[in-house]
Image (tube, rainbow, N blue to C red):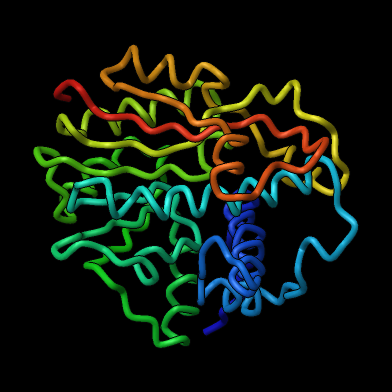
Length: 274
């Protein structure tokens, strides 16, 4: 059986670019994190494995590389410490946190994504003899299909218990209506005390044009835009945003000059039931 990702959608294939950034970060002398499986995805896809920042990149492209590195470490730090033994990765892509993080005993993690993504991912992980560090369930499905919450519950998820949700690199590819629908579904499954980690949406009309990223930018729809935090606060969450610049400074990785990338990481706590 082939290990190529040819069946992936254009949005799903962006996970390969993310894996390439993570692979390069992992072999730096001072890595923010180590993902021992990222290079395997890149190699299985037939992509060049050279470091992305050895090529002459600047502006938005350089900023996006920094963004991926910072958000990976930011979520790495917060997910195991969130205090919930249920973890759901929405549009999990080629995320390997179920294998590389030190999870508290009893943690159960669900990865939701389209079948071609999860199939490619599993083949590469199996070839690496990867063993998860928590109970892991891969749940194929489309998050734009209204039936995904039911299937999650059928797979053993308990909506009466606190959960930590991760929507990493997801909402920017959704319209405002799609993002609101997805987050409404997440809210309906979230007991008080549940946590949601995600990026703030962006105003795609103000995104700088960068030829190196044209194939990615054309897929962006912006989600709920800069008002994501306000939307969450009006829909049963207590949300706060940490700016990308603040995260970068905190990890000793300040943003490059002229990155043109205004973003932030949202941490929201569920305050109401359903």
